[in-house]
Image 1 (tube, one colour):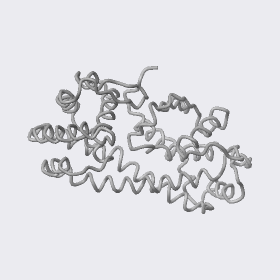
Image 2: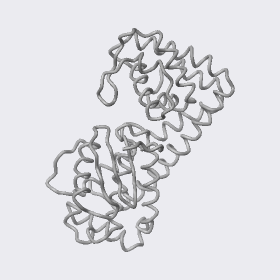
Image 3: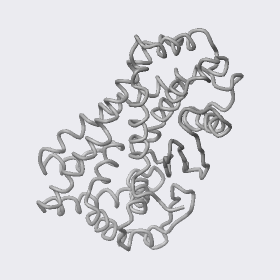
Image 4: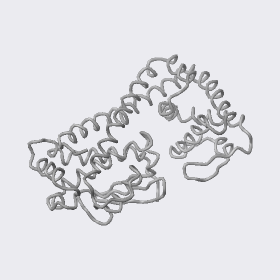
Length: 313
């Protein structure tokens, strides 16, 4: 299957926006379907106990959208747990980093969706079994996840803002003990040629036999991975993940210190280049708008709505 040129995290958010817009009336407490939803949540242990739920494409879509929102920051804003997200004619195909594939259609409850629901609960919330097929408690777990993710987003936005102001602010960041999430975001926003140059430069200081486990579970030689430039964004992201593990390694202290010191030297030299800094700044601003601010607004909307449902603890 060919890879999409659009990152899975962006495809997921785009899909969410489209389908939430189709059920926007449900977010009004005055709507009939909001009343139905509130009654279902109040009087049932499982969505499967309600005929009203099964008869409403809008209510089913609401649950599916909430589930997507709940997984939209799994392990970070780039959602590394999600290898691929594709939608065609209302049907979604998800490929997880475990190689498991899930499929469901918006507005429909079928075997595909039930399989996805079961795997989702285990993957996102570590819940493997329930006495109910579609337990109402999933809403509480999603609500709590969204509330936690929302706080993380506010923290990230607060941390990124100063880095957009000047070269000095960005350079100072590399002199400090970095926040892992912010560091990964910054590295992902460097110009592609800059990231390649960093990897090519840094690999010469590593032992030739240095190997690490990739996010796919394969052992790979770091020098072989880093010594050639990459233009494919997905392959580049894989390299960043490996680099990230080296930078924060708890088992390879010497490699960790080499990675940190050489990164600081490299960034100091590169950020003197106005074009390099301008491109990094532009990428950070783009990420702030497309990944951070969009999620903040979305999570605010969903958390307000879930509060109106008066979910039981």
